[in-house]
Length: 323
Image (tube, rainbow, N blue to C red):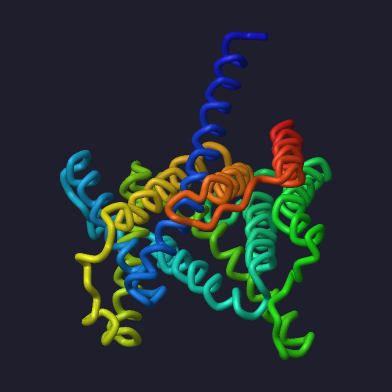
């Protein structure tokens, strides 16, 4: 093995580790924001607080490292409009999960968006969309992606099946309407992959993953504040910040690290690989939160099937990495 090949492998393992770590942060952010929602009553206000904290944190980092918060007007005017929309896609993904849960249940609310993420990320790589690196969708790569998705199902759905829990919420909606909600979940999941690709290219243009994450958070925060001021103005006035524990404010920091990490990794590994690596981290993080009851979450001990699911996902990533 040449020195160059060895160093390349070490760098890739380093990048993979970053992907898993930022994936672990996301379910922890969700758990923190869920506790925050108890005090603020509105999920939109909880998301707005989280995004605002993340924007402030990233803004401070950008000011310290680059001196200016916003890119020049020349850069803004010379780029296509879609490159500034990553934050809005993130909000749609977040809101989509809120809307999905009462219609298709918790398990499918996890599975359908993840399916959308995997499908969209592979298409982005195959066609080089949003100026992403071109990675053809070969048979081996497809098999790896299918294994990753199978691992998700084993980790998320199989425990519910074994314990005879229903995979969908109790509802009187028709099969057609349930199917439409499932398709909606796949679409919102695809928006998450598109956001990663957009922010990855934005980080190249701005020459900084922190700048790209800040801009994404800033636009998302503005969008959320507009929603809150229109929809939840009364709840906002009744907000009692003194009752909120200090750690309930930290969800935005984890979200900021997550988006920054994605912006950094996509140009190096491609949208597809980053998506599946982060998914492994997300599943691991979810199991840690459930097993230890982190951030006052209900405790649910890790089961053997969930560990097997993670192993299957790792094998899928390994197959994709062979290309």
